[in-house]
Image 1 (cartoon, rainbow, N blue to C red):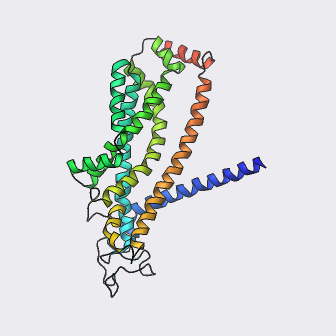
Image 2: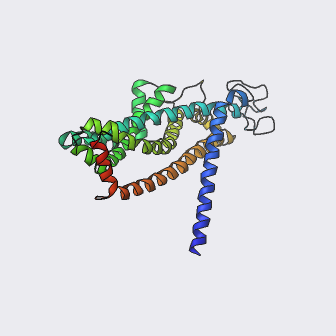
Image 3: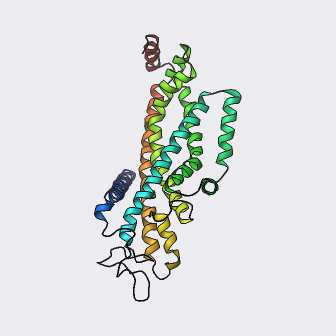
Length: 307
């Protein structure tokens, strides 16, 4: 009975993973092929885009997603909006992962007061809510597409630094790191030759998990008017432009909102799967690197011979 339940759970998880990957691929393809797939220019105000009452047109065969408050094709704006939303989400998260891994990894290699000072700064930054911090930074450097990517990165690197620091402390205790230190290897050598190599796969997991957060933050900043600015469409500013029409034309808000939810949830599911696989690999690696095993001795001999 339990075995059958496990199998059912496994099938459901695999289906969820495949569905999430399909959603990500379809949205990315939609963004890349927006000039081909979009039926109209995202800024074109259509002759029949508004009803006789001056309200957005509901979804129909003519306009699959309906029209927005200015009579523009919502399908076209969602497709083009995916470009800005994905660009800001991916670029900002990549910058955050690189900054966080570098600072967290270096902090883990340090010792004493230097290590404590770096991590106290990280903890101080973690105390600020990421969205509030992003809004504060936006008020200083101003809103734009590329500024939004930088703002979100500066607001999100701290949790990655904290995780990278913890991972570095664990990696430092492995046999090959101990062997390298015994042979006189310095911190910079250990950081560049060994630590980064083992942090790289973990960074891929952070990249996948983090995009869910940065996509949501990108939409939130655009909705608040401090992210991607018109005339460039993004899912956040589509919702912002149509918020006053929610009661009479709810599709103008719900459709981009569903895309934000679907993309974020899909990246979360894929990221959780990668995280679980990475933890299993690390557990196997830790067993192989247990004190007194042959792999540690073999690594020491390799280092002694310049490997």
